[in-house]
Amino acid sequence: MLFLFALSILSWGFCIILFFHFRSLDTYILNGTFDRFLVRPLNPFFHFMAMKFDIASFGQFLFSIIVFAIVSFQLQLEWTIGKILFLLGAIVGGVLIQGGLLVIISAFAFWTTKSEQFYWVAMFPARNLTYYPLAIYPKFIQWITAFVIPFGFVNYFPTTVILNKETPYFPDYMGYFSPLVGVLFFGLAYFIWMLGLSRYKSTGS
Amino acid sequence: MSIIEVNNLQKEFMIAKRETGLVGALKSLVKREFIKKEAVKDISFSIEKGEMVGYIGPNGAGKSTTIKMLTGILVPSAGQVTVNGIVPYENRQENAKNIGVVFGQRTQLWWDLPTIESFELLKAIYRVTDQRYKENMSIFQEILGLDEFINTPVRQLSLGQRMRADIAASLLHDPPILFLDEPTIGLDVVAKEKMRTFIQEINKEKQVTVILTTHDMEDIEKLCQRMVLIDHGQKVYDGDILAVKERFGKMRTLVVDLEDADKSFAVKNGELCKQEGNRYWLRFNGNEVSASDLITQISQTHNIKDLTVEEPEIESIISRIYQEGFNEKQTVQG
Ligand SMILES: Nc1ncnc2c1ncn2[C@@H]1O[C@H](COP(=O)(O)OP(=O)(O)O)[C@@H](O)[C@H]1O
Ligand SMILES: [Mg+2]
Image 1 (tube, rainbow over the protein chains, first blue to last red):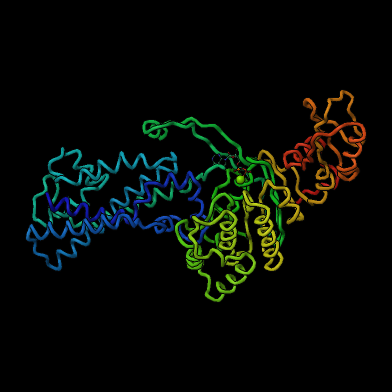
Image 2: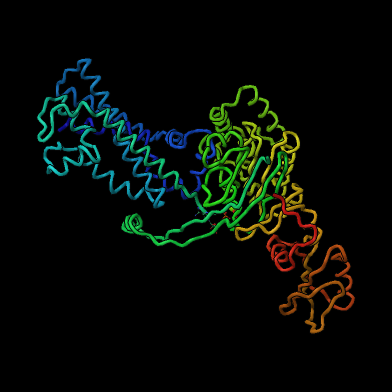
């Protein structure tokens, strides 16, 4: 449980540094700031992503690293090279999956001119799911978090690998797929975002 | 081929009826009611290299929308655009290298950073060489006086300073084409003048093609030989600015407050177009008679309490062009 939580906030801490401002894409569109990303010789997605590194999130990031260190110390985990590499892969996967969801949510702004509200509805429940072992949820929800919004790969599946736990319904090696799932999910998110961008209407006045 | 070609350009916005709250936002994903707004109806023009063209019209005419299609921000609903041989919305990044853009209403710079750091960032983004960067910066500093505020964060700049910084930033990468959307809006007289001088200089020295939108007639008079006048998304006039000025720009209105109302008030060379109580509006042609002639004439028979002379607004010029047509010397380029 503790490890689950620690891994969750670790990848989240990293994720918000890169992607947190995506949730307010609607504001950038409405006040016209977004226009500038389309008149520069750069890919608008990466330009927008690089525009802002959430400095305020650094605090949370440091905090999450400390929590993670304490937890893994308490659990007396033995860190082999293999496990460290696996952990790094899981973090990359977790960052991409959560970042991907933030990107998808932000893309709603291109259709509805709203995104912040969707953030609160979608991101919170999804994040809360990761605080508990997936095994406690009904099969239906487990299935969704494995294959639709793959938050199971953020921490649950990797944790079961690191701690050698059983995963009901799913094979034990699911955790190894985190980075791949992350890349695929983020790719999908990028595609949706670019699709939204092609419908971009700018703002009046 | 002309450097900018616009053919039968159209843009309509489907404006969703506003739904509030989260339920509204979700509902609007599923089913939405739209109102169609034709911002640009059917506009064509072409612009040659080195020209400086005033793109003018009243608020809401569709000026910004046109500029956004030329810069690649918006995809047209119909029609063709090419800018330096490139279709902007299909090839935004290529197009971006050829153009500089200034939106008077909002900055392109990094709000929280010192001005100089925005320039450094843009230098990196546009891959401007050190050599060119230095040359350009020294020119801009000389004409625009950037030195005064180069280390101040953009958010603390006055509007005039911000606009100067913005126009310099848009020219860092030596674009052959410059789009200026309301570059003098909200500026005081001195700042406006500086802006105009700089635009003129850039156009002359560097042969930059400039499209300038404004609803300030004076900008156009001082800067452009040619103007494209639009209203309600349609082109009303395209051609020599002198012809319009000759015809309509000389019409002024003298507003006088008389001590006593006079039912049979009439003045030679002045057309009485409105009256409210003791206040009279007299329209006159500046070529035929001067305001002081009129005033002398009136003061011989009446006691004048107060008076002002109104310059023609773009709105009134447009409505007169509508009323009277513009047959004489009309040149529709294309
Ligand atoms: N992104 C947009 N969405 C909806 N309506 C818009 C948008 N941009 C402009 N409009 C509308 O189109 C018309 C023309 O606007 P604009 O091109 O900004 O005019 P101008 O720059 O000449 O003042 C206005 O009625 C404006 O409200
Ligand atoms: Mg405008």
